[in-house]
Length: 204
Image (tube, rainbow, N blue to C red; front, side, top):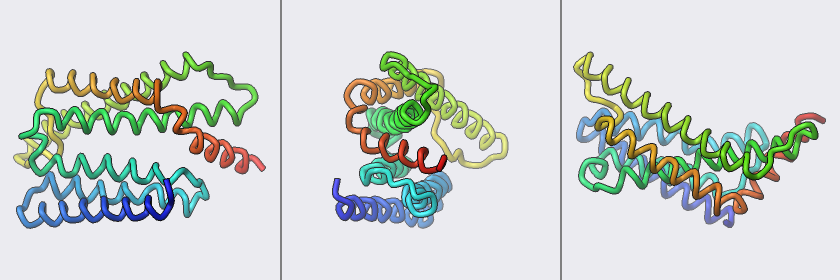
């Protein structure tokens, strides 16, 4: 993806998240405000990593992060409650991002360290396990956040609908991981190369 196209897409996504933040402030919806504000900060992470750490990941990474945050933030305004498949979409999309990060890191370490070797079957299992671990952690955060909000008479910042919803979320987390492991890995080669070069330069 061309850098100028990526930059424009990220700015559009950030504008959408900012608009959602304004909507949350106007409607005094705490969950929307918190998710939009934190999400907006997250969208700047790839640019900060590139500028401050000289790690030049592909332009598509910034778009991927921005799209994941945008979908989640917009979902807090209503789609999570009214569109039955929306939660599945965001979980699969975000899980694929986590899986991509796990694969890129593992493969770059494999290339960087001569004493490491990760066979492809191992990487596939590794991606799935890492993604599921993050998925479980997220579900725990949602549950604890909801219970803490109820205990203090505050509106929950995150949405959690019970054990059935949690199990289904984890299923779609697995879907995102499998997609990356089976068809997405080859598209991550530029990022693997960038991270490997960054690790090599750090040793010089």
